[in-house]
Figure 1: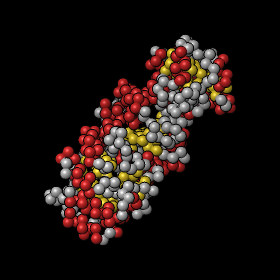
Figure 2: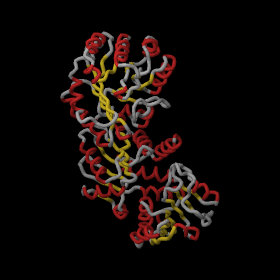
Figure 3: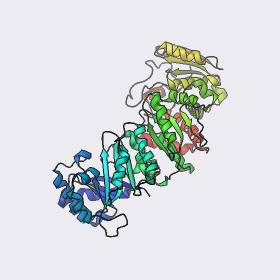
Figure 4: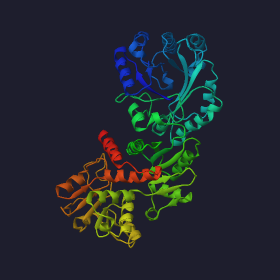
Length: 531
């Protein structure tokens, strides 16, 4: 079983003991005592207290060269490590370069260390580690192999900075390849936002452990999740090697609440798998390379992805190049937000944004699809969200007016979809005050966090008690535009409802099961409440 290790910076014994108790309460299986700034007395005061030994302990005195905070000379640091070994923690972490570059140290340390992982003496087991906070080392595999050849090393650990998702995926490739030659437990971590998946999916790859911090605590390396996120959001305890993986592709993507929505749905519906953030740089080449690499990993088992800004057009291009299947409405829209990767190696895709929006409107108003055919709808904006909305509404026969700050973009969108059952025309956004549309849909980012005071139109006099106002912005949940519209008597629809309902379409395509709409909505609401 892959353990969750909670790292705790040691500054005083009295401060550390309650932190250990809280980390264990939240679900940590082990504690790493980061003793970079501690002294002999402090380490002894902790390790001789029964309260500190309620769970396995790793002692680390990290050198500055490998991201630590120790400020003394190397002789003092090594002496501190040896002192910790005599107090018999469960593990002690020593850098590979420290082991190689200080020939006297191994001779002093070996008698204090366990001979191997099965040694019953109670002496600490050696974790031999290597760290690179700048990049992925070119010789990473060679370093791991060399560390494993040290007889005293019971566990091999490498942490490196991932500049992109491709760098992070190297860790999974090594997990798949190295067990054929290395018979010792492995921990391979990619640091930074791009490397978060190596921490989330550590249990899937049977890593010895992963690091996660107690809620509210400082991280000891870039990209560490909280214990609660690992266990509750990312279903850490239920991961197995063949678990399917789903994700949200975007740039940036750390703000997305989709992992909370989908993973809650998987848990409720009894579906295996986990949904993770997949940050991919904005260019198509980066998108293509990363998706190809994800699909190429033998055990990763990528089965589907939500696609957000700026990759929706890239996803459509990828699908076309792969000979994938696309439904008629999504093909007309020309951008997609969902990719499916069935086990037979084919690729499918769809745009669930428009359908999620239609379902959100139907649920709020009681309208059916025929009712929508007789509505006049104002769509504010002419970007990707507006494109999906216009295509969907036009396919249902609605009359649509696209309002945009740049008339040319609105006209191009209107021309493309006019006559596709419904009628679509274009107008400048500053002409909105004269609109005779009874449904208003904001597809601009106006009002989105952090610019929460902005609204998409300057004059709202056309909005009244006979108007339905729908804002596709979901963070904040209640935008200023919705609040002002409600004050004028309009019925309002939140963007969160569209987000959840489009996720339902994705979920059912991913799993083949009926999505638990209520559970997914509650998860979305909770995720926004935490922000």
